[in-house]
Structures are given as C-alpha cells and as structure tokens.
Image: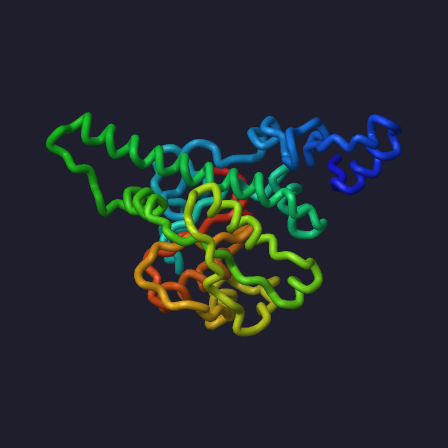
Length: 276
C-alpha cells in the first residue's frame, strides 16, 4: 500500500516532464505537500491516536472513569511519566518502520512535531482541568499530589530533551539514529535544548521471549551518563516503547546522575491497541 519515497520519486522521473520537476509527495497518500514536508496534514491527522481517556502515568488509552491502566496500577516504572502519539499500528506503525528501517529520515520531523503537539495538548488539558476544578469549587484546591496533576506539571517543566542512545553497530549500518532525529525535532518544537545525555555501556541484550522482570534485570547498568545534572527535568525520546524496560533504565541512569523528574516520549506504544 505504501511505497518508499525513493521508489515514488523514481516513478515521478519516469512519468516524463512533469515528473522531472519532482514535486514533493506525502509518504502515505502520495499527494502533494508543501516544501520538503514528508507527510501531509490530512495524513498526520489520521494517524492512530489514543481514544478518549489515557492513563495518567503511561499515557495509553483506558476506559472511562479510570485513572490508571492495569499495568501502572500494579507496577512501578523507572520514569515518572510517559506519553506517546498512539498505538503502534496502521499508518503510524508503517511510518515509524520507514524511519527506522528504510532510510526515510525526513519522517522524523513531522513525527517529532506530532509528539511535541501531543505534549502541548496535554499541558493545555492539565491547565483546563485545574481551572475547572477551582471554578466549580472556590474552596477546593484540587488534589495537587494526584498522579495526573503531577504528570501535567512535569510535562510543563521539561528543560532538556534527550534520546535513548544508539547501538554503535546499528548506527554504523544506518548512518543515523532515529530516536535522536525525533528528539531534536521535539526539542525544536518545544523551544528547549537537546542534549545527548546518555551513552551505552555495552550492547543491548537479546530480549525476545524474556519475561518482563528478566528484561528489566538484563537492562540494569546498560546506560551511562555523559553529564551530571542539577535537578533539571528531562524528556527521554525513543521511537517505540514496548515493555518500557529500555526507557525505564535510561530514566534511572539520569536520576542517579543528578537530573530531576524524567519523563518519556515516543511515537508509539506497542502492545496496547486501545482501552486495556
């Protein structure tokens, strides 16, 4: 259904004089896009999102009347909060895969901006929630220690954006690091600094087939800090979150290095197709 940009460009060249002008096209619908955009606004708007209410900690879709997903209700995380654009499925999955495996690095900018927009929407929702509570009950201060309130405040407090560091072998093979491209796009959109704060101490261990607890144990000590923090709030960006073991370990390493609240952002979350 979807073809790589390079194949579509070759098709445009074969189409004759009009094709030779090389009009930029959307990666998904092959429609015209302005400038060097890789995705049109219509396709961006149709990428899978979390429906309705989301978990206050991890940001996945949950049922009405709930605050936490089942996982966050019974387990802790190395990070304070995480947010993703949507579930790892459909056009969002296809776009992320193209960025990671097909050399379509131009997709990092619209995906990063989309993640930044999701975070901005959450900040607005948090401000609206706080205002509505105080308006409905002038004598009430709300619950400033609720997980939702803390997550809203933490998202607004981010001062540095970083990324999960690359595996050196994969970086050599690709020639670029998808998570870093995404993180830089998020930082630009949010008007904060990007800093490569972590490096890998060793190659990532095989995780396929391992139970969740074994995955976390295997990740222990995988990342080393490249700088010491002074209590700054940090957003760690990755392309996809699966079990959360990798980003949890990254957050733990940053906190031990002196950074403050550490949140996680990614394009998609695997294993959650909606309410859970």
